[in-house]
Image 1 (cartoon, rainbow, N blue to C red):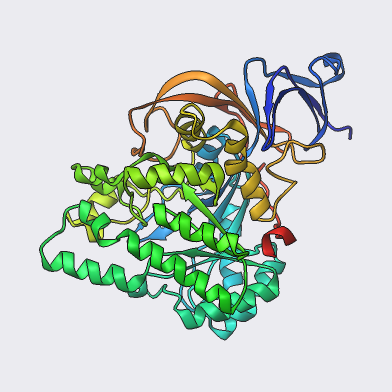
Image 2 (cartoon, rainbow, N blue to C red):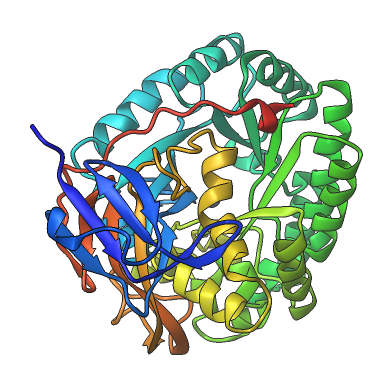
Length: 467
Ligand SMILES: [Zn+2]
């Protein structure tokens, strides 16, 4: 069977290092060649996509979403079907979701169960991260098998003792050692449990139950202390670590310092920490903005943009974990500490970062591509298959129209929720056409792909990440 040949013609191509006008040739699932505009004869292609006036980006990778995940008595709004559809509309061609892990059960069995749920349901490519809740003999034995199965990254928590998910220092050391030995990378949710529990008790004692006390009871110090602790433990057992959702001005300074001393530490922040502040918790619908770590202040937001521009932030993820608003309202009983945490965000990410980042001069276009496509692919073991427009890479491509001005809202998006954290914001730019492995998934703003297309990506970390 001859491979379908497709030409992307007349666009401005943005890579992690460059912005330049050229045409891209796709053969089958891969990028085959580049050339100056007009170098290829359109008549020799099965299809020509006119990208005049559009930015041509590598398909985005969102390495932090929670699809099909039960949480605090509710369940995330996105499963693989609805989540990958919304992701495709948002210019994303690969997602990495987290498995869910009942305490004491097998990492591998949970992984396979999660994979079975995703199989045949995803419009775009996908992979999974494991979750570690302990350092039992079984867990430590299974980590190398997980890495071997193409899942070299897994997350643990420094908090949530009350729900038995806390990884204490003793366990963390064992997990770090096993991680170093097996070629994996440990992802860590950093908030110091003792500080959170202490502050929570104090606020409740004083009768403070309104939404804003979510932020007050999860102070920046809890995050900063927990990150520093992980770095200190890494001195004992040197292993690659990825700090998920850094949200404070100090956290990025602490990580920067460790990086400059040669520690193999990486970090991300999320769209919402770069756009929203804790002031939103003061409103009547403030509970819908509850996430952990909490939204912070303008000072943090400015520091996170700077860290996104020059480091140490290497990735901006969505942490998509939307929950039904009705569930959140009902389960909260009007108290901040009972609200299931998490917000949807897989679809708005590119447009929001283009609007708030590129249009406002905070990051360049190539940096936007680094933060949302190239670095996630590189750090999570999928580069150059993903996150790249070089010949040989998967033809995962977004044709982004930078000139469309629109108002973001749950109504105008395609996420499976009535809540949009960026409701009513005037934004710029929209993915117009999206290809995943050479197949057009979104054409002219309409989803035309099939949930049979998405494929599990087998990941393997590069030495540059591990060392
Ligand atoms: Zn998360």
